[in-house]
Image 1 (cartoon, one colour):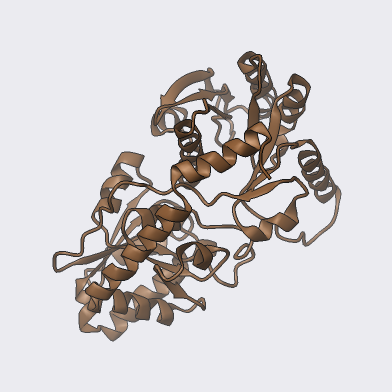
Image 2 (tube, one colour):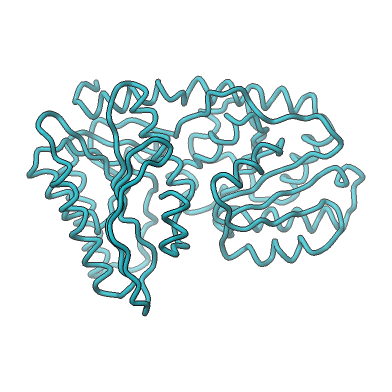
Length: 381
């Protein structure tokens, strides 16, 4: 969703990365002649509040976006999210071919999925994450399995996959790996100046690698290598590791740490434009390391930043030698990568340039748009 709607509705549980990927997909489709729109539940967590927000429509990055009504009252909130998208899908139905892409296999989408089938929409599944094996098998696991099977059966247009490993997680075919869309503008990162800035953004939690960065900062501050004086870490986003990072920011030791917290898209782009290094640190040994793709690496690489990333999923296949890879969940390995970036800026700039070219060639909007449109109209091989 867009920032204005998020702030007005008081939503704190959204995913900016997911929003950027969805709107990027729609922008890519528009560039190849399609007329996409976004249908959003527009919801956050429900609570004891009686607040109610009517459905609304607006353009986000030029994409027509329809938000379902949202109530913060439990019970009513879930009912609205189940039924309102059905009514919107009915109103948006037009004669001629139409397709509907479902972002993950959410139970809340099931009524809309069934409605889209009855209305003749071509249905596609956008599968972003694999599901860890359940620790307990019970009614919830059985219901989740049935929801997944229903999506796989009814998504006759196939699946967009976040990475190749997810092909085994769905029977929807044909399948196409959609890693996100690259910014085709000239890279913005500049390595001029005495300071090198590294950016970590998104969900700040152990399972996204934030704690590896925390340990790396502590190691640098205890060992005090001279090059650490040139390093400035910028942190955006929210999550359980935010408090520990904020505590490090209050200390004036090197490397410097600035914690911005959750930002609007415009403010985030300003931070991105002044950084030279982009961090993507989802743990190598994490439960979803091979069954999801950190789309943030495409965003960082296409902005011209040197991507320092864990070697997970399809990242190396996409960026090739255009990134510095961490093969272990080890803060010492992260420290070494940061040292290379700071002490050898000419080499770092060359690696970043290769990453930019790889992201642009593999994830150009027109390339992704043509492939996804072929799925939408049923002409994919």
